[in-house]
Image 1 (cartoon, rainbow, N blue to C red):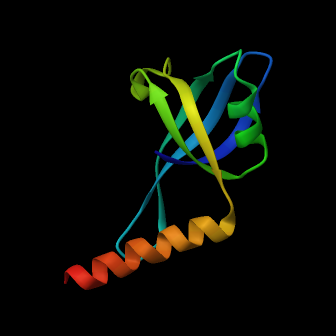
Image 2: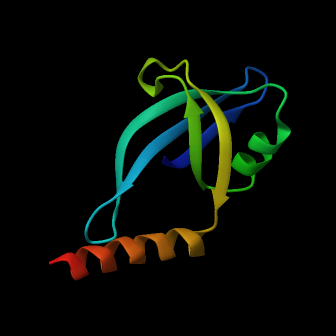
Length: 96
């Protein structure tokens, strides 16, 4: 899932995120605010989230009950995010 990182609480191993989508025009659409758990013994997830404003995260558990745990996080630069937005926009144009 594509997310914007809002805050990281390393003391409680929690992260506040905005779940995002990309519409047909390449615009970011905020879907919902989430608070997810971070595995206490995986520094790579915390570092990926600390060093980026946006990320793709994979979770274990139901995200709607805020007890889901991030099991993998891949930070995204603004350049990577813009490329993804462009690809989405181009795909939608080609399908019409």
